[in-house]
Image (tube, rainbow, N blue to C red):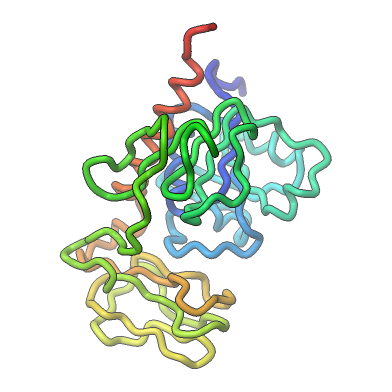
Length: 273
């Protein structure tokens, strides 16, 4: 199958919720030569809308777009030909003898700091959120803070600083999050999409209980069996009680992805000279 005429090779660093929203929107815009990278044991919470699940299950589907795990150059090419997004573990990527040369790099790790992305990584380097300075670390920054500027393309300077407080949903912000009470292995028999009550035990980390602070739907939950650090975000309770939200790209991810798409198309369609 032939590729669309405007289809730069885009490398997305990260394959969690926001990174997946970016890849999903680019793919829907017929930018099909995408490659996503993530840890061999991903730490994402919103697993039902994250392409990194392909690294565990072999394949993943997010809102109608398919991804597949790829370990070498041939598997990446095969995924492109099948109109699927290849997801590569960072360890495998480091071992590739011949990596696809990226025209665009998107740092969507959302570490709130720069983990070695540079402006020389590609002809266009896009970074999401705090920790980057457009014009120094990358070419453009996409604003990730909820509010009037969410998804804005910043061509000079940084994104808004990290507030440390998650966005408000249904009147709750920090109460929505489930965090690891200690370092250890997370265990749970609960599933994303299940209802929980205030004070209900959702799981545990080496015997220390993880309890919900508000009632709602488990919109996200880190994969059971994952080693976690103390304080790590391991779950998300949505008080709006809408299970459909668990399986669709969020408003925030779509807004951020729209900013990335704007930056990519502006770069591809720039005037010569």
